[in-house]
Length: 602
Image (cartoon, rainbow, N blue to C red; front, side, top):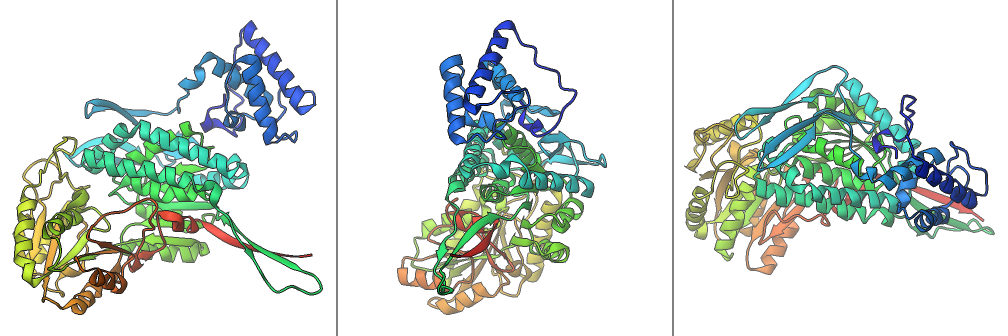
C-alpha cells in the first residue's frame, strides 16, 4: 500500500516488501486475476487503467479478489495503487491487517489536556507531507487561558507558498483528483467527515486551548458545524451540472448550446482566528466539491486545528497536492497567496481593511476571482410588541456568543423607548450571571479572548465609549486573573455619531441605542446608516412589520425573532463593505466554478 502522502512520487530508496511463501501465492493469484480481466501479460509496472480498463473491470477485480482470496478491498484502493506491484503490496498489507496501522509520518506535539491525550502536527503541510519552512522561521502558539506557549509552529515564507501552489497546480492539472469521478471525490469527503467526527473531542480540545473557545461550544459549533459542512458539500459533488440553451439555428443547419460548470483551478483560502476549523470547512468544502485544489493559510494565532485537519485529510485519502496548509503571517504568507499568478481564486474572511488590500493584490497579480467576507456592525431592532424574555435572551447571545468574536454579532441594538429601560435591566442581570473562566470546564459560558492584541483593542474600544459619553452599565475591563479574559460589557445612551456606534468591536461589548415608539422607518434608516451589511435582526410579533424590515434592511442575512441561526444549507455573506460572495449553501459552489458555454452545429 502506498501511503497517500507518497502517492505519485518516486521513492528509489523504498525498501521492498518482504513476503512469505503463502504471500507469494497471493501475488501469483492476483496476477492471474489481472491477466484474466485485462487480457494481456501483466508485468510489475503494468498500470491497470493505462491498459484501457474501465469501471466494470474495477468492480470485477474487487469481487474476484474477495471470492478467490477472501480479502476485501475497496474501489478506491485501486485508485491509490494502480500498478500491479503497488497493488499487490497493498493487498498483502491488507491481508496482514497492516493497512489499519497507516499513519502520516511527521513530528507530533503530544499533550494530556481535558482528561485526554491529544496530538497534532506543527509543520507546514505541502504536497501530502509535513515539512519545515524553507526559512526555518516559527510562530508561537499561545494558550489564551493562561498565556502559556503551547508549541512552536513552522511559519511559511513566500518560497513555501510557491512550492505549495506548484503542488496544487500539478494535482489539479495532472493528478488523480482531476481524473476522479465526482462521486468518488464525494466519498473521500464523506470519509473525512467521519474522521472529523471520530476525533471531535480531540479537535474541540485543540480548538479550545488554541483559540480560547469554550469546549462545549467548540464541540457543538466549531467542530459540529464543520462536520455538517463536509457532509453537505460531499453530497453536492455529483450534482453540479450545466444546462442546455435554445438558441437561434443557423439554417438549414441546427445548433445545440450547453453550459458546463468547471472548477477554476488552484484556489487560495485565507481564514480568520475566531472559528479556525469551521471557517476552514466553510470555504474548503465547497472548493473541493467543485473539483479544485487548495492552498490555505490558517490564522497566525490559531493554526493548530488546521494542521490536525491536514493529518486527517491524508487518512481520508486525499491525493497529495489537493490540500496544502501553510501557517504564517498575513503580511508574508497571506500576501504571497493573494498575489501568486497561478492561483485563480481567492476566498478571504477577515477585516474590511485587509480585504481591500487583498482585493487590490488579486487585481494587480492576475485578476483572480475573489470572494470576501469582511467586517460587520449588524443592527438588531427590538420593537415593543416582542416577546421580551426571548428578545433579551437572544440579544445577549447575539452579542456574547463565542466571546463576541463572531462576524455576525449584533453590533448595535436599537430598542424601542417604551421597553428600553426594562430591556436594559434584564440584559444586565443576565450578563452579570455569565460564568467566566477556564474554557475546558463544562460550566464555563465565557472564555478568554483569542489573543493579547485583541484584548487590548477591546479595552481601548471601551475607553473611547466612556470618553464620548456613552454610559457603561457593566463590564468594560480585563478580568483580574491570568489569561486574556475580558468582562462582558453593556453600553447604553449610545448616539449614532459615536465611535462605538460606528465601528466593530469584535468582542463581548453590547451597544444599546433607543428609538422613539412607532418610528419604524426612522430606525431602519439608522440601522442602514453604516458601510457594513453582513447581518441584521428584528424582534416583533407583527409579521407585516417583520417582513417590511427584512425587505428594507441592507444586509445579507436577516434574522426574525432569532439570532445567530446559521445552517450549512443557507447562503451566508454580506453587502457593501462587508464583502461579496457566499459561503454555505448551493450558492457557495458558484464561488469556486467557472461556466463554459459550448455551441455546436449539425
